[in-house]
Image: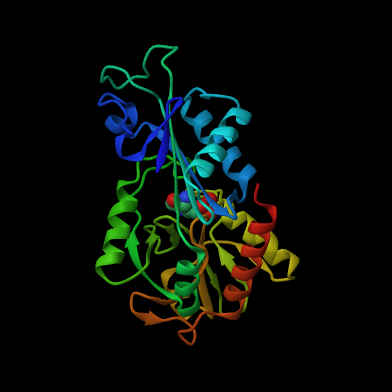
Amino acid sequence: RVAYVNGQYVQHGQATVHVEDRGFQFADGVYEVWSVFDGRMADFDGHMTRLHRSLNELRIPIPMTREALERVLKETVRRNRVNEGLVYIQVTRGTARRDHPFPAEGTAPSVIVTARSLPLSKGNAAAAKGVAVITHPDIRWGRCDIKTVGLLPNVLAKQAAKERGAAEAWMVDEMGLVTEGSSTNAWIVDESGKLRTRDTQSNILHGITRAAVMALAADEGIEVEERAFSVDEARRAREAFYTSASGFVMPTVSIDGAMIGDGKPGPIATKLRAQYLDQARRDAI
Ligand code: PMP
């Protein structure tokens, strides 16, 4: 395996950044993840646009043109011979003597890109059975719309899920409303049959898969309401699922050990997963 690190392709095992990198010291950086189908990246523009938005919001300089970035991403996929898998990019504010304010103008941002294989069949097997989620308090900051590498609350939530045999943790705000998963957006089909997911005016990541699935649901004539749901509503839901670039649409069949619906992947989740996979594969570049 090889990784791209600040202009060079190096052996993955030897791929390192400096101890004074601000990503390492302050989590002062952002990232994106694309899924790969047939060696090509899905939802390319959506993730690329969000990367630029994250950089702008944090005033991290754009490290290179969009075209150059695209070439690096594609080359990293190619050199790792990834057919089905994931590509990861991280951009930090660069390396400078440790000091909280931004470093001197002209400090080059750090850019690293990795790619790895992850067979689709793995996720498909989980999706066929449906997965469990737990709930966990959302203790994050006020700018969860920025995709920063500061993920400690998400790490703690996901670990709690793992320790309880669940695939994901749905984070819950002080009102008892689900915000999103630790690395996914959360959805239900509520008691009235409406598809519900929290609005992006609130403090959550604007999921690229979320947006794609919303459009697919609209095409299907399924009513989508962008409105937060409570843990209680999730327990009573007909169906539940979560979305992300790495998990696509993942049917969710229990929450905190309580069965959702009949405890099997729901028809809407199953259909949206198939449609998303078709579209992502078709539109990948
Ligand atoms: N929410 C959070 C907190 C995430 O980390 C992710 C995954 N990056 C998502 C939602 C899903 O976003 P996307 O569909 O763009 O991968």
